[in-house]
Length: 272
Image 1 (cartoon, rainbow, N blue to C red):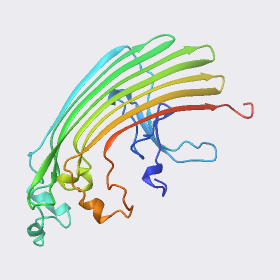
Image 2: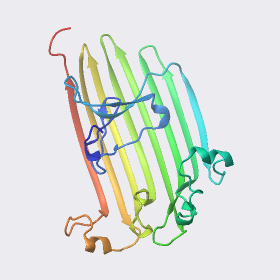
Image 3: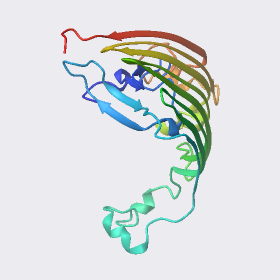
Image 4: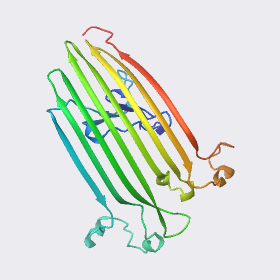
C-alpha cells in the first residue's frame, strides 16, 4: 500500500491499533463479522498519522439479535459453454489445457455461523457478537503432478463492544478473542505439503477509550500465543539457503507469545 512493504501495513479496530507482533503485516485479532459496520483504507496525511486498514463499529440502531448461517460447496460446475469467449486465453484454447493441471486450487467446503446481540439504551449501547467458521481448501501438490492435498481451517471469534455516554463525552470498551487453527499453514504460498505448518493461535484484545470535549485517550492490551509445528522435519531449504539468511531457519518453528500495551492520546492544539 502506497509503495510500502506489507510488513509496515497497519491494522485498526474501532480506533485502536491491532497490528500483530507475531505475524507482521497482519491483524492480531479478527473481529466477528456482525461486529463490523464498515471498513476504511487510508493513507498517512499531515493532519493524521493513522494509516492502513480499519475495522469500523457503529452504534446499534435497535435492541435485538441476528443469526446467519452460510455454507459453500464445491463441484458445482464452471463456465457455461458460450461464456468461455469472455475469458482470453481460456484454458480450453490453443492446447493450453494439455500443460495445465486438471486439478485446481479450490474451496472444498465452507460453513460459517454469525450471531450478534445488540442493546440500544438511552445513555449506553452494547453489542455482543460471535463468528465460527470452518473451511476446507484443496491445494496443488507441486511435488507430484495431478495431485492435491486438503487444508482444514477453523476460526472462532468472540467480541464485545460497550459505550457509555455522558454529558460532553463517552467511555467505550472493546474486546475480541480469537482461536485459529490451520493444519497446512503457508500452503497458499505454493509450498509443498512437507513445507507447510500446523498452526494453532490464540489471541485476545481489550481496549478502553475516553472522549471528552475534543480530548481522546485510549489504553489497550493485546496478547498473542502461537504454536507452529512443521508438517515434516525437512531441512533441505534451510541447507540450500534460498532466502540468503545464512543459518537462520527458512520458517520459524516453535512456541511464540507477545504482549503489547498501547497508550495514545489526542487533543486539539488550537481552540475551535
